[in-house]
Image (tube, rainbow, N blue to C red; front, side):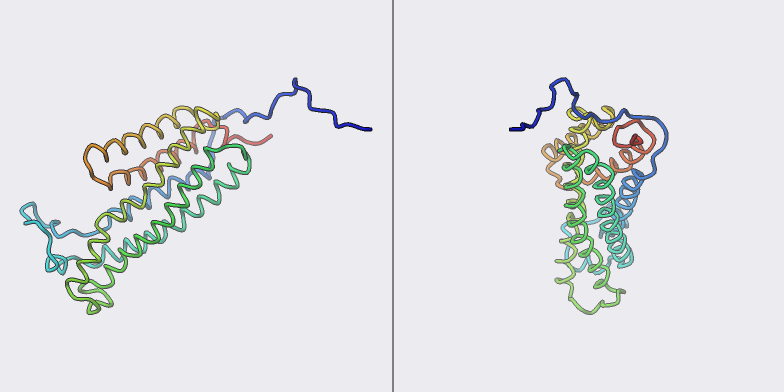
Length: 237
């Protein structure tokens, strides 16, 4: 009876290719998501924007004075961001996950991006709705002051909270750097420390929107991968 000959223990397991210098274009899509994310996040209006002597609490009548244009623009840019995040996840899947199928860190990066795309779609849809219903918008007479106030409350922190799943992507990069050696350790350390600092800041201050600053990390990570040395951007033999 023929028996299958087992692999010799002396045969080395497949390893990631060595990182190389040079320029790789596709990671710049990650950086573009960060830039668009910053624009979408800060396109908003607040009742206290015209001075520092604003009296709290914010009332329904205060919301009637908001400019509808920034909200409409933010909603549109947010939808663009959602599509770019999905495109980034697709490119990551083809360029990294399929090339290194055993990488749990790469999977964490992908899941964080997809989850963020879903939340961005929802929260920036709300922002666009505010711009649509505020005075001066195309459907300005749809809701009264109380209805507009409820929409404003929904957009107060939700667009910031939408980026929290990217913390998982940051920790995925850290895992890829120190456990799997698929990205540079400098990038992995920066990603892990930045994500941890944002979480600690939430525990210390109680402000739930602080992790949204992880989108700035997208800009740094994309540029780092584009011009740095990481096995995931190395040319395959």
